[in-house]
Amino acid sequence: MKKITKIMSLILACAMTMTLLAGCADAGAKDAAEPSSDAAAGTNADAEDNGNAGTHTEAVFMIGAIGPATGGAAVYGIAVKNGTELAIKEINEAGGINGVMIEYNFQDDELDNEKSVNAYNTLKDWGMQMLVGTTTSGCCIAVKAETSNDNMFQLTPSGSAVDILKDNDNVFQVCFTDPNQGIGAAQYIGDNSVAQKVAIIYDSSDVYSSGIYEKFTQEAENQPFEIVSAEAFTADNKTDFSVQLQKAKDAGAELVFLPIYYTEASLILTQANAMGYEPKFFGCDGLDGILNVENFDTSLAEGVMLLTPFAADAEDEATKAFVSAYQAAYGDTPNQFAADAYDAVYIIKAAIEKSGAMPTESVSDICDKLKVAMTEITVDGLTGEAMTWDSDGAVNKSPKAMEIVNGNYSLIQ
Image (cartoon, rainbow, N blue to C red; front, side):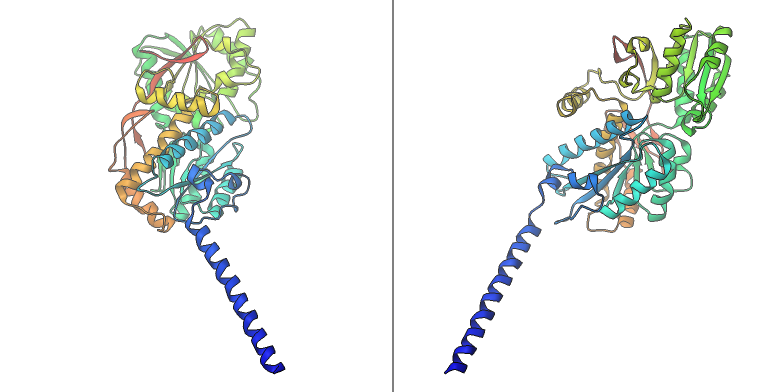
């Protein structure tokens, strides 16, 4: 009898254990079937701090982005982060891409090539399938070697150097290339008789700046103005511009062309003011952000002209809706980098819809499909109407001329 009792106890214990195991399995299946709140929102908050934190419970498109969220070019990176995030949020709320949600992870590269590559590897570990980035040209060139090896689809919102598109077929641009900016700037100055004598201050150590400078000087030979001074600086010497400004002033330059980034431009405007030199200043999209430089007297930027593809004061409905949504979400007026990144996400959406790519496919298979689709789609965006792409990854669109008026970027009609 004791043996029978002992056997019955063992049977009962086994039954209870099986019941508990079945309950765990049911709970796991339920969790796997329900997307996380982060995935539904289009962001992965934990993954922004830890690239390995993303654990995905269902098929989603994994989009990563890279840019400088800290350091001297943080205005660019934060704008790209926000613009990408806003577009993903809108797309997810509208039902995703072909019904598939997007998860998003942004990594800070501090405008450092090596850190940008590290950020890319962090995103790969997270599970990235497509890259919106990088934000700046130098970092983009460093990262494109990695994406090319992995056959990862890469769409840079604001990297404009022509070297980004060399020796690979997986990288595409949203921003027009440096040569186009240099040529466009020279043509605008000439066509609109902005100045007769022009000086240039550029960064010879930066591919963005030197690329624009080269094409600007070539096109200037076809224009009715004279380059009277062309002075360089480097990354190791970019705080004192007194020599460059004095040469421009002595040469009688009425306009100083600045194919450089906003941090250095703010120093040049400040130092020109201190020496009583008041030329017209003209730049490209790198100057977008000068109104956000800490401790900079923004009144010195009044009248500064620049070529950029986006104006926050444009009156079309798409721009007004974007600016309103961006201001509500981030408490700031979006710049060109935010608009480029916003467009980048919708460009990816259009390419996915055209190609039929699915998140269950490999990174390489997705890339192969998107490469073909990019040459077949036409996208109306905030930064260009009827944008198309060549097989080499270059975008076809035109820049717009802006002027800073009353502390705001204003489209020149």
